[in-house]
Image 1: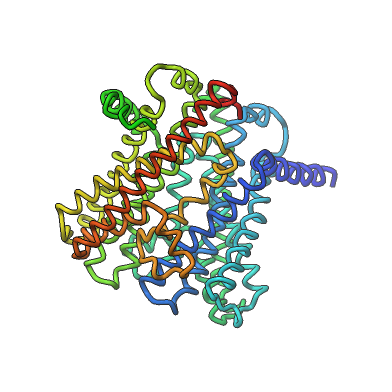
Image 2: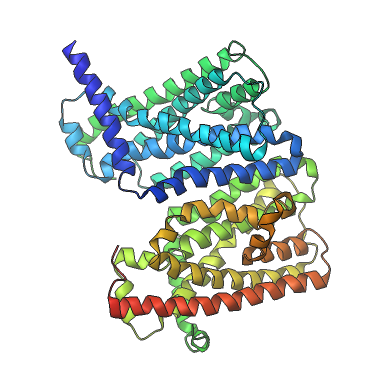
Length: 266
Length: 265
């Protein structure tokens, strides 16, 4: 019981401290500009482009797709920087020197970003309703909330894997940006996945977000939670797969770094 | 800015431009901004605008190229002075006899020139991957427009860089400034889709006139009077930007030499 309590405390402290380390030094304006205005401007850009391409009556398709995709700002950039931040700040050797539970440390890095990302999506959807005429009158809102949370969770899973890669490469922002922008194509946020070439559809099917966006669109069209349950379960599975891949990579990295003395070499 | 300095120090401008290109071609962030991000936007737009027919491929090539130009202007040119502050070379540059604005002009020239790569990449992407046959409707006028656009972008960059150094509260919005300009300048869709109140803002942005003229000479057959009007607007804005930039550089150099607060975060 004591071990469980200690691990829970470790998880919670790691969660809060890594999030504060990432954002607490920023002025509120900078935080808002990067976390609220930039994603919204990006959403509006793709909604305008989409409605220009296929007509005003398709705006819901683009608003929902891009609003959900906003979660990847927290999921990819936030989580990666939380994991990789330990190396940049020079705290990684100390972390690896402690006997603390690695599982708790590692997954704790993503927790706040799940909450943060979900709030970002809700803000985007609110703007979509207020400014873009998004119709959520037939939507099961609690189910949509659950979908947002699950999609954010699975995207953070990918973020954890990316975070581990950030321990191995110096060009982490390049990789992050590339993955983030690629998700705009492959997740189906802006293009019907069925219109993509087969190889792109295959890539799309193994990425987070794809099912979350499809589920959100189905809910907006009036589907029930039962109708989208398969999509949500697979989204959770994808998130867990990426998260555990990241965890194994993190563990492997620790062993290799200790064995070869390469903790700070990248 | 003393304009005669550009002619007097033209060798310096070119050397600075060459140095900047050499340095930035090794910077993954710059490569992402001028090659990969416009390429991804081009792929998306080509898929999204497929239904509008093959004519739109050239529109996408030019539009996504312009997104690369703006992103690079905002992040690279915008930080062209800041980068010297971060690396500790700002004081040396300000203290040397070569006018500082000449150096920043050279850096912006390099940045805008290398950003044209985004248009080239988008062109090959549309031609090779999507199989579009791409031709410019008015090639000569297009290349004249491209030169004027480059000049307008450089001058615009000269106003942004000192603002970002002196007014950090403005620079905090840097990330949020990227997509609004894509929208307001009609890079990939006409501004007629936007609310009417936003139109005057578009008219005040030099990249809007560049987009009008570049799209008009590459995709459509725009009447020469309209092209000339867009050229005129670009030249007017360039001159206004140069006047504003000269004042901003004066204030900045004053801060550097008298207040000694330039390097203070």
